[in-house]
Amino acid sequence: MYKPIRNEIFHVHTRRCKHAGEESDREYVNKAVTLGADRIVFTDHCPFPGDFFRNRMDMNQLEEYFKSLKDLRSEYENRIEILIGLEAEFLPGFKGYYEELKGNASLDILILGQHFYESPDGVWSYLEPDKSREFEGLFEAMVAGTETGLFDVIAHPDRAFRRCKAWNGELEHRSKTLVGAAEERGIYLEKNYSSMERKNQYWKPFWDMVPEELCLYGYDAHSLSELEERWRKRKQ
Image: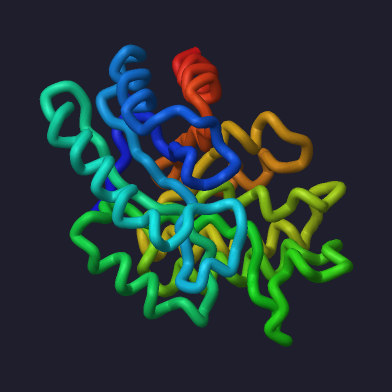
């Protein structure tokens, strides 16, 4: 079971996701070693059977991703710990796939990053013309994913409020429900540095209700420069 440590770089993407820099896995590991990290946690965007979704690796890249990081883990075993993870949306129709991933000995951690959801009529939320109530579906999906017990961390949960203008009672209610579900299962919630750098993606009222022991900091690094910049912010 995943447990965060103080001196780790958590939530790192690779070039396979198609919206990151072109740096190699080795370059990320070398940078982490140079900075003095004790652990680096790769959590690239999870592919899905059929390759339905963009901005993530293809299914035929998954085994190469595992192999690359396992080879680096062996090579760097005396210098840094390397954990191999994936970041995935919870989509109920793929529950069996998540269970298969959790049973894969190559995978150390599965994190829940709910960028979109499946609406009741079967439409992916990013295709809906009106996204003003998007946060409802995102929170419902995160709670459902949390209740499966398949995920170790909920990435950037407050990013679900990105289209909201101000904190209110409804947002507080949704947040309490998710935090309660996470607390019941001992699942960590990620304060995301990428969210902190963007408008309406980091919400302090949300984090005020999260127990400190459930919080961890995620770099969400898509390049070496982001990794290094966020490392320095974390150390301030």
